[in-house]
Amino acid sequence: MKRIALVGDRSPAVRAHNRIPTLLDVLRDEEDLDVYWIPTPDAEDPAALRGFDGIWLVPGSPYRSPEGGVTAARVARLDGIPFLGTCGGFQHAMLEFARHECGFVNASHSEYAEGEEESADSLIVELSCSLAGHEAAVEVTPGSLIEQLLGTSRTVERYHCSYGLAGAHLDLLTAHGMRFTGRDESGEVRVAELPGHPFFLATLFQPELAGDGSDPHPIVRGFVRAVVTAGGRQLTV
Image (tube, rainbow, N blue to C red):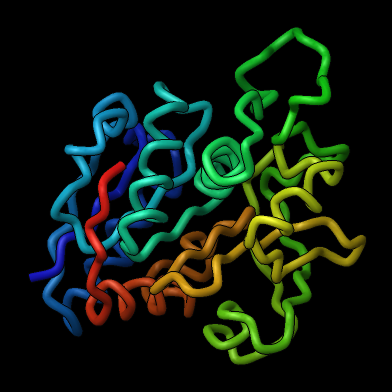
């Protein structure tokens, strides 16, 4: 039995929260999975995530505890636990990496600073054009994990997102090992992954919203496959 933690503040008003368990139920016919929801305040304690074989940091920000989202990404990154972050999960995974791997300890998320001006510390910023409810093309890097999962260098994906990664900080994250492997047609980052990790993939788009929910997206299938086959290193956070 493989255990997957869905880290997020479950709400019937969030479409992704209804769709994700359905997709994993479909995959239960192929793999022996046990799925648990972990609210973001609970995820502040790394012990709440111990023993899981996979962590999916789900959409639905602003989280009740942004630090819980950051901790979930850190546990997955350091312990070698297969990780998928979508939409808000992408954003908080980038915050975690910036703060704890790049030394950018004041990296901030503009969604939690309502009414304040964006500053040099703003890592996650409001998009110039909201992607909420949109579909858009993504060009992926040859040889990347996401290209292997998709089997193509171009895909059209669905979004429900208004915040993304500030371009001013891309070089810092890249210099410390984050690889940006998917961009939209204007060159804006939409996918990030960590080479050398069993499975660490973050997408600003939401693969869980593809189709009608009866056929899991290749990214979701790839994540579950990694959960089944990978073994965490169980380091200490």
